[in-house]
Amino acid sequence: MKLGLQLGYWGAQPPTNAPELIEAAENAGFDSVFAAESWGSDAFTPLAWWGSRTENLRLGTSVVQISARTPTSCAMHALTLDHLSGGRTILGLGVSGPQVVEGWYGQPFEKPLARTREYVDIIRQVLAREKPVTSPGPHYPLPYNGPGSSGLGKPLKAITHPLRADIPIWLGAEGPKNVALAGEIADGWLAIYYTPRLAPVYNNWLDEGFARAGARRSREDFEVAATCQVIVTDDRAAAIAALKPMTALYVGGMGAPELNFHAQVYKRMGYEKEVDEIGRLFMSGRKDEAAAVVPDEMVTETMIIGNLDEVRAGVKRWEEAGVTMLLVTCRDADHVRELAAAVRGDIF
Image (cartoon, rainbow, N blue to C red):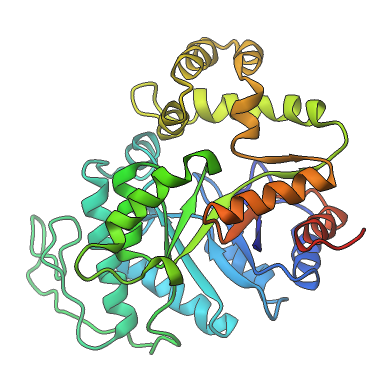
């Protein structure tokens, strides 16, 4: 099982201990470090700045939002970081949700699957650099000849030759169609709220993508990176209780009531009644009550919590379910080393 350090996106201020965490992760044998973005900090700049101090860690975005940049701009970011890091970039992409796409980026949210497919195709054209980049659209037409155009646009090839024509592209996906699309056009799946209990369902979605004509990968060379809190503790109940407010936030507050992808994931797990009640309480401002509604199982299904033996058994269970990397958050360097030792089976 590989480990990826998830730095996430910044809050009101940048994190103060990221360099310490990254150094510890590299020394402890982590595979990767990831940065994210929402509507504040971006994902690429922290990787370029802090990643310059690393030699072995892969540098991944988990995720960059496709509405934040045109596909050619995103390809420029990725090829630049790949050169600077000596070929260590992982480009993780996601569509985000309608509140962010339309409210922050001022772009239409409709047809996210078609937009993703077109976006990835253009990025691969840029990286391949075989011919000038063109796209018939309809979402990202190149050259652009629509309303307001001068008619002078021309197909172009990147001036800079990419270090790699095959920078790994992973898709952040939650629903069945999006996961199948990842299996078809991507090199990996960034899974959130993964539960080993539903591994057969997820594998069916991926297999649908792998079976499509022109699919890039098969199960043997496809990466499944799952965001997962891993907590080694002798007080499992206290750890679960501490995580319930965050679960309530994402289920009840991170998305419109009419369209919350995180809530839909938990409903697929069988928590329809609980999700509806959490959402009702959270949206009415009763956040503590919303957290109290979260059953223990909603936390433990998607996280690995317990004493050392329980954590190691949990890691094995996730690996057997098909997960190739756990994306973990860590509070300090000691926590980084603790998790690395727990996953490897070292004594600490």
